[in-house]
Length: 216
Ligand SMILES: N[C@@H](CCC(=O)N[C@@H](CS)C(=O)NCC(=O)O)C(=O)O
Image 1 (cartoon, rainbow, N blue to C red):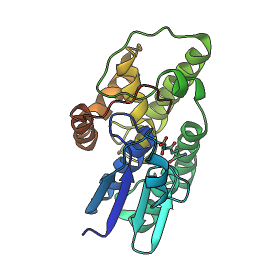
Image 2 (tube, helix red, strand yellow):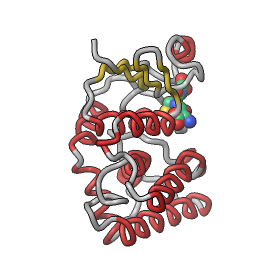
Image 3 (cartoon, rainbow, N blue to C red):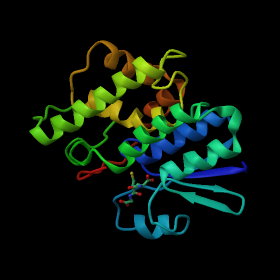
């Protein structure tokens, strides 16, 4: 049994699980993963056995249980400083935290109308409230890449928590055939080429479970 266990939802649908899983992968630590199918009559009771919020992801490390994707990232950043999950400079780290929290707390229209569904491709109209979310997301990606991305292909150079937070959004851009160009397309490609992302995506494609109504 590994030192860490992460409880996750369906790889095809659970965007929050993907985020925390990518953060954990980035530490290089060995971990066990337990997948609890979501949106089933038994899901809540099953998840509550491990997560006090009744939601996945949850990380268990010895006596410590951490739920909420961003809290998991913060915990991992503290115990694995060498993984550089946040940028080193306090001022840049503040921006990385701001864009990560912006994802965690916002973009409700995109999340509601364009849920993560990694193995599928759909045509769907972009209503104005979603366009606002998409414009803000692509502006944010461009801004981070231009100002802080010189050290690599990701928002703050090397892959970190902020990229894990937006990786499921890249997947949604593909699922719903949303336009990207230049820098934003290059960023999406960098996420898609990331080995951990590819590993999750391959598993999502092979997953048998189907959920009809899914928002987040
Ligand atoms: N704010 C939470 C969101 C967690 C969340 O909504 N998880 C969904 C799966 S993506 C869930 O556990 N749903 C349980 C269910 O619907 O059965 C986080 O950042 O971890």
